[in-house]
Length: 274
Image (tube, rainbow, N blue to C red):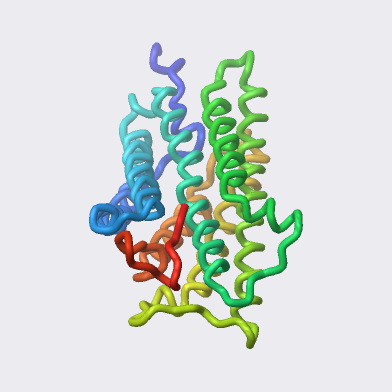
């Protein structure tokens, strides 16, 4: 009878599939190895950030598999909170590379987009990083507020974090569309280096695909966090949240898209910066 009072938090929140979590943990191993190798081979902060994202996702899915498969683990609220934090805040290391790469590609154009106050703000990398840091802080704080006295505050902070990330994702998508418009204009030509890779030549379309995957993920996250009383439906969570993230990571692995050559060598006649 004593066990009847024990709450399985994982099951209550909809975490049931061991197989799904294991599959995605395994799926992230190849890109983790690829980006880790490239981070040692090349000096690219973008690649390091993507390596961090893959490592975070592997850890999160391993924890998720344990929560779903081990009864005592599912009853551990701290473990559930850790998984929630890893799933939530890891998104920054998937979103920022897309934003940075779009700006890098814009700056390599002969035909620069018009500059105004709004454009200057939306192109400010430091401001973008600061807002992302705020979203991460709100998400972590909100996930840790689980007692009955402050659970509403925690939920409000998590919603605020999700909405901020949604706005930043929309901003990144808009900048991608602006880049596409400029690239397709007749007067715009890249100052390309010799022996261009696939990622350099077709990078704008790959960045568009990444933007679509990020939008699907973040819209789903925003919709579901609006209904906190409903447990996660893993039949929709994996295809609409987990899968788009992984597909975006695979797009980032396109040769030439996010890799920076060693100092003194350049892509598009300028050095990519973070």
